[in-house]
Image: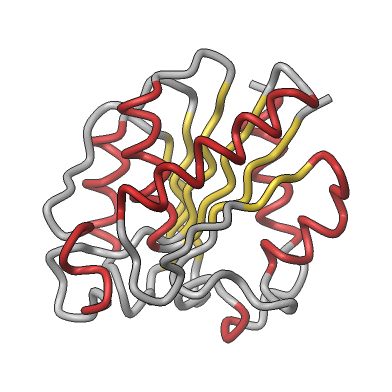
Length: 181
């Protein structure tokens, strides 16, 4: 078995978002982070929330997979650098460019200075060729910096509810490939 830590972006993932749909599918095998600063993200708060969710998930199973979207990718990467857990994989979907003009101002105070450094676990970055928050060249540089595999998908925008991916079967296949490695 595998336990999952769900790490959404700003404001969490609403009920039609693929992360929320997957969380329902996984039931008690999933733990969602619960930072106090959803709308005005504070990196230390999000990292503490990941730690708390990881503790819950790791009680359920030795193998824990972080499932992060958008700003949650940066929080996950930062937590991984600090915690250095040995039983985790990271599925990082649509990381935004902290230096880009579309980066959320709400997150600029604590998330903007981050850079992609090697992660201590198997990782996969999934990015779209038309993401308004991060161009393909930049997402490729993040994957290289994190020493993660990368999968570029076509015409999925920010890979969120507005992208119309629903339960996102392709994402579940990609996640399964990461978990089975």
